[in-house]
Length: 162
Image 1 (cartoon, one colour):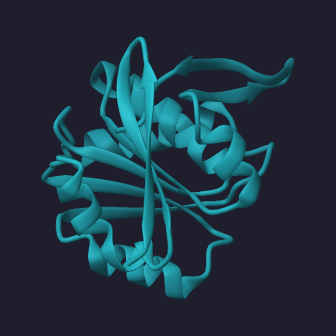
Image 2: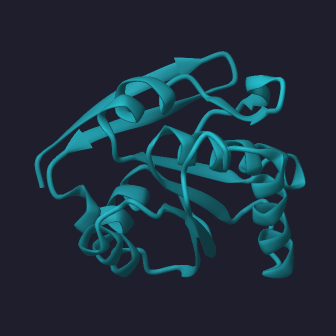
Image 3: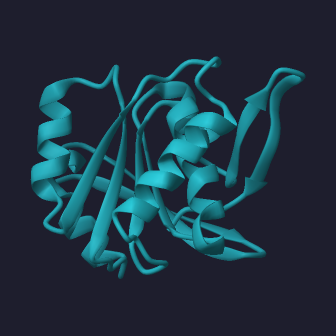
């Protein structure tokens, strides 16, 4: 597994960005190497993602997991979908030591990160961006949020991933 690790430093915390090949096969090892521990993982997965990659990521993650497929679109990047995610986290008794992992493009990461920032005032959050735009823009800086009928990204928070 070839990888590059970049450390992002912010006022609210630091986190690594890991770039490399075959990372999807080694998710558990990457989490352990970065001291990210949790019992349960909520995987918010972009519907457009290749099933082969989904299988690699989910089988690599040893923790108990809930998989929620998300249909990313500007129309679905809204508070109603965040409430659905929060409801599933509550229904499955997630706590602050568990983790929400967003896997997909920018809309998936923005929506998942915003839900993580709200749940119990902050659930562990990991963003796995799978599109070029999300890798260079939306996954860096902790910008999370959803759209309203009045405009894009009008409800949100800054919430750094682990």
